[in-house]
Structures are given as structure tokens and as C-alpha cells.
Length: 95
Image 1: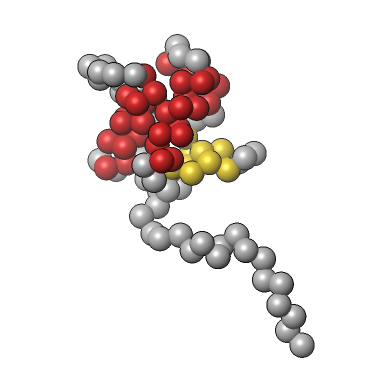
Image 2: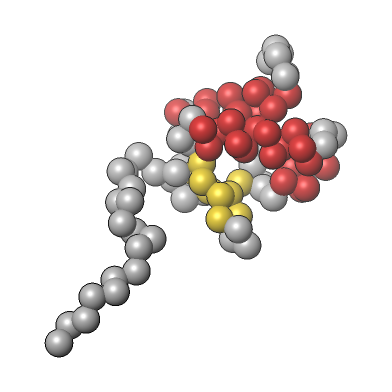
């Protein structure tokens, strides 16, 4: 399980966690498609609240680093451009 290195980081914990995600993406420790720990598991390991992890993941998503999928988890995003039509159903009839 990925754990952020928080030693020596200043500021709010949620931002430190988001910064750690960013750094580990940049240095290759976290690659596109990697699954991040569930909120509760990471909170338990770090000794913080689930809300802190939620805020950290929200910040990382705002930065374009991760995406969450209800029921599947939170994943590191790739550098490819996502097609906005990806989630649209094709309702045309091929007659």
C-alpha cells in the first residue's frame, strides 16, 4: 500500500498528502492507473481523520492527479487527454 512521506512538510495535513501524491507521480513512484488506499485505511495508517484524507484526495483531483470511482476506488490519472464523450451512451440507431 502506498503511504505518503509527510516528515518535514509544513501546512495542513491534507495539503501535505496531496503534495506527496504530486511528488510521487512526478518521480515515478506512483504511475498512471495505480490505486490509492481507501480513505479509511490511509487515515488509520497516518493517524488522521477520514475527512483529512477526503480533503487530500479532493485537492489531488483538483490538481488533475487522481480520479475517484464510486465502488472501485481512487486512481492515479494518466497524462493522456480524456475524451469527454467517453461516458456518453450512443443512442443512435444503426438501421
